[in-house]
Image 1 (cartoon, rainbow over the protein chains, first blue to last red):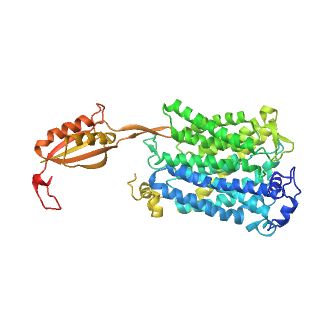
Image 2 (image 1 turned 45 degrees about the horizontal axis):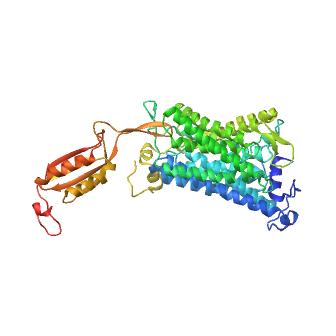
Image 3 (image 1 turned 180 degrees about the horizontal axis):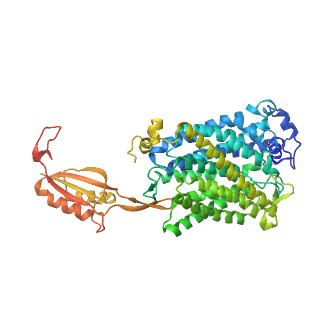
Length: 451
Length: 112
């Protein structure tokens, strides 16, 4: 039984200890309930968690707006609105079929277009909704990396590509029964809630976008790196707290099963990693700059959340703290590295989601302690290097290379092709004026003078 | 008649107004401004990287008064706006040719 099918069976028909897999069409849910009277608690659990994950959208919107200048705030709202709106439609129509609609030679799914036929089913709809809010998260991460200079039209096209192809295909490889999940090492590539599938995908597509675009005007002056201060640390902090809160749906909800009481461990691990990473990022920034840099502390909290996303179900609390501490410092180093390489990522999306997403995949292969199975209470349990499971580490290393190559490659191709076709960057005049007025005609703060 | 223009620290506005109340003055206008003097600006930090803020926020007070009241008001502002650190601001005094009260049409000293 593939991991993806197993995940589906959990959401659709889970009885304690593994249910019978029946994918009969059941649009009313009566049959599903009859076969599994315990289903309602699982359905409510998954839906409530999915609603929390959807609430991460305003989190990203506020964080990105706060870290960017006031003249681009409307544009960031427009992007965060439309990637969720457009992404919701595209993922329902095509994305889910490619990600979870059966398996064609380990590459992608081929069934369930428009969620029709057998897919008009309460279990399938539940699973589609869950995967959809994750897809929207991956899509919205890129918005920050390409902020303040990308044409809105290009962002709409990118949203279609990421929701229909980039996210669903890699998602299929790991969660949909694809080839990465069947690697002959450990239990195949694992990624509990998507350090790789969601965050590294978003982060490295963002890296590709930032590289094709080039740095914002004013980021480098005579070869020297300049700070481009954002317009509201208050909004940025609100965004991070919303994300932190939303992550309590993102990670624990990924059991897709309320009968796995492991959800308490997952919630605690999620919180510990965020706390540890906020602290370590703040301390590293203080060590390097002699100031208590809140912006870095906020980035750090999200870096910790990203890192714990893959291993959260399989590690113990102390390991979550270690994973978070490393993530905060790693994020800071990564921000410095990208700046030095001439890559302008206005909000730190590549470092937070890309770099720390990879660290999440790796840390799973190190710290998994053999107390929880493959989205299952039953053995075999997932074991990392420090508990004797070197095979799992190999699987994780392979998935790290693959996620980077896939996300960066397809992302680069997408942005480069668009750039050749119509030019993805706004004109220098429009960039200086700000995208709010030049692209949307609507300043975010019309009553205030903005720089 | 004279115009007193005082560029002061934002956080000193209340203190200056309180002490001016004790001395007595005809009225004032306040403007929020940005600017710099010989020492250019401050160093701030955003996400681990320093940057220089060259234009700092200041408050400009304008008071029109009779010639004989100038010294008392100026001394009062100087006393209450002073911290002794760089950036305390400056006071400018200039001649006023005429004043007209819009409501009544009075001119000169009685219109102040």
